[in-house]
Length: 461
Image 1 (cartoon, rainbow, N blue to C red):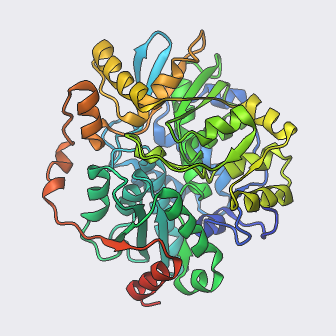
Image 2: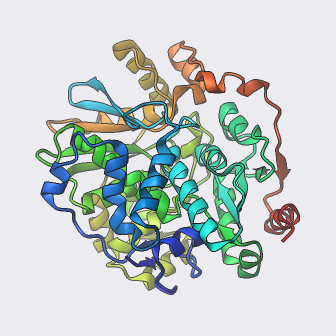
């Protein structure tokens, strides 16, 4: 299996090479050269298999020779051993034909754990064999950062620097990033919004002298290994509801497009997905793009669902690549236009996207009302991001079972949940002392040179 850049001007890499590189040297994102549909009888055999068994079955063809069969099985077992539910990603019914896929039973209580715990084990295995040390830099709107720190803290071959927007993540999210004591992790509070953090991350990857000097690697959802890990729970959820003998639909609260792109890959692999619904908050660039055909940035407006406060959805480039017939030159041109504000998608490409995805949006008031309604009608307490998904899913319910991704534990957003539902949701016992722990955080300007200088100083490289 080879991986190619969405901008068409970087060498094809193996899985391990693409994983360690993160971003291609032409600025593009790596995608598989080919995605082959799985056999119907293989998908039909998934019910009754453990989450780890499904993960191995799904990932093995994408891994190639990067890890042996034994190594991959060990990586998967270690990745999910610390999850708090035996099913890893259990389904809970909300109403007739509407289900929640609970993705918050990992160590940091968010869906990012499914990918980050796996990629942490993959990095550790690969780097130990290579005898190398790398510097991981990530940008987060809340959950990716804590999941990355949890996955890489204390590892011998890795330094981790996480950029998050100062004052724009929840108290729980921030403390999950700033309270680990391991010397190889560094939380950097950037004076800006998430898009600024993400832009500085890409700037670092495109500054090749710095990238090579510090051994830069990325674990944001720009990393293909992250997307691959997320494809697994689409299969386990759908097979629990009868796939492939009947279709299912998914609604995905998303800001950076990575989680729903994983659903798109699941569909390409043969999972019978009737609808893939993008759910956005008031920062609704993905919904606006599907409606208008214009991908145009606006100001980021802070919300009670901060992990979705994004106006530049990095993974959208991956689906644009397919929408334009895998023409990397066209994608590169449009990404250059994005730097100056936005671009218009061709008629053929927007028709492709509208055939693959539906979309909807939820205002702040609608998000609060959904949290309240779900508590009153089901006794379930959901986080604001999940509420965005539930609200939008309600507009697409039908005869086909709808699965809404519950992306985070409500205890990560206690103020918003309390205001909407009147409920206090405690942190799990293993995190009960989170607010008593000392914090380690460095505030940095939204300035590439300053951030790079700090990373060089901390790593000695």
